[in-house]
Image (cartoon, rainbow, N blue to C red):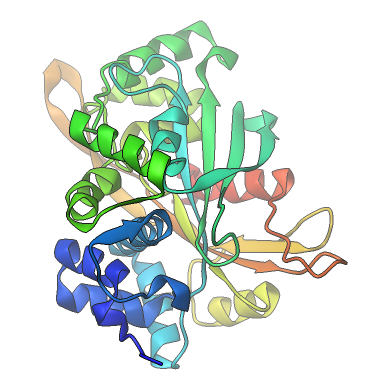
Length: 341
């Protein structure tokens, strides 16, 4: 039986064309990839392979922005281990958004053709948001989920709504018509010609970014007064809020990371079922531009993204619990509150 080296697979070939050979090899060494997704290169790319390539690019992007996460992954690799990428989280705004489709549609129009479907819906009422887990149909246990949240602008004050309109109302649609057409083809057939997949992958990754202009500082502060999550989206957009390593024992890992002086969350969150246990690093501080007085740009420190850890136990019937917990999620969201930066 032929053995395929990861460097020769369709998935790695796709990401190598974007991040280069060295970075692609580092990702292969860092992240567990289902062997079924490491097929030899050919003239077509399946939806699952394209989904895995996108996940790897977004994982890589987050590590570039979260130094503590990059150190953690390096530690794992040096011990001969790999990260099991459980899920990535993104935030969207359900309100006026220019030419960008509002709310989660901005991203789920990509996820659905890639083979994702809604797993569960999570009301995040304390945050004025709704979360949905998007799970891959073909590889639900081994291709990372997306936790996509929508912030409901109409649940906040008129002043908040005005600032949200000014910040997000001029958003642009990052997907060219040709890429949207390729996604339609992918949705219909489940695969794309390899050249088409290579062409659209940078556009798909680029959709997970900020699509609106630099916000005015006064509007950012008005959003922040009512919603730390809205303020975060104002500076970070639809970038990965966090990625998550699925580990055997979150509690033990948290103690180890605290002993190393890593920026760990104060407590471990346990779901109501007891089957899903989570904790995280605090958000990495970053500097972002704002439009200040007299239209001059100013830099301010704000919370960026973070790295999370999760332990998943099995249902009584043996299925891995791929769900989330509303209380856990709302506690984890606090990692990006400015007071924690």
